[in-house]
Length: 427
Image 1 (cartoon, rainbow, N blue to C red):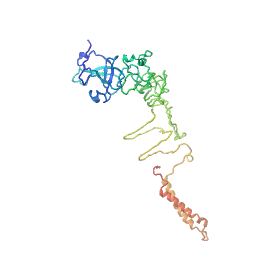
Image 2 (cartoon, rainbow, N blue to C red):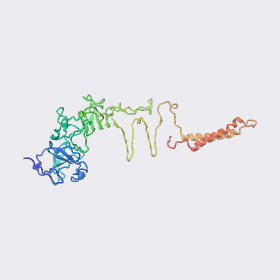
Image 3 (cartoon, rainbow, N blue to C red):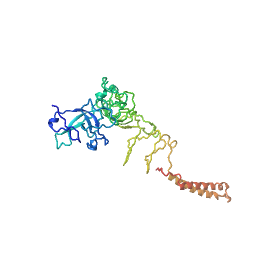
Image 4 (cartoon, rainbow, N blue to C red):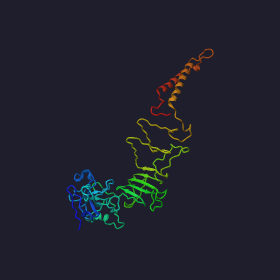
């Protein structure tokens, strides 16, 4: 005898089973997603607990024939349509409308009072098309139309849907629009891969030597050397969208690589390294040649922002900042650079020839003041200089005033401190 499904109150249209005989033989039930609550704009948002209703789906077990597709907003759900709750709380993998899910009947939050009561929960969408993008499927009636038949019915060659016109003609949701340039990731033995619907993914993988389809990170190392790749946004590819592809560190939009022994073909946009004296210092190994554990971040822009404390950059060897345009360092209070030797401009050249030492301004002022005092005294002496007969020595008398003038000029420079920087200090 078939199990009869009885619905709860008008505020909860879940099929509720309250007798062991009713649900003991109940198995997993496939269902088509008719609608889903994702925010407070849904008309049933207040009915099913407001924000606690997020993720609730409305479904039909008639997965072949359903209400007409192609609507452009939330479906006005019939009060007789059952609902199901997401089975996971920490991982949100909500289905799209017209994807197929499995329904399980499990205990409710009234378990203590009604230990035999069971309500519907749903599993993630069934992988009908083996597509990370979407697995929605039309009804028989809609698939019979010519524009959808080519996409969904002609799947005998490899049993996958080969859409090429950027539109499935099946309603998948209010904002979800199908894209044909989202490629699945190619897996290797032992990989654990998490893929979003839009070319974002996490690969928990390893070095794979002698792979049938080689990747970018397995040129060195041994099979099983771990690597973690977080990628957001695929690069362009002329391949058909149903053919899997691999991460490409130089072409993907943004990526983070956590390596162990691998070498990555990452090419930097700036290769200026004049801050290193090639004869006496070790230039950091270029990213494309380095082998070993590292974290590589690659994107159009990188932002590090510490909202309440510090950013600490620490290195056992070198730290290299390079730019094809400008490097700016601003400090609201101060900028301090401490090292046994500080080079400005370049570290390349012969000391005391191409490379010269900075002047200590305060010490220079003291020397200049001494010179000014000496020149003033010398000018006074020259102005009254006489020979052995007591006659003025004109050649000396005439340079007395220029000497005193130079003394005054030097003194003005020293007292005005025009030679001293107000912002740059050195030791």
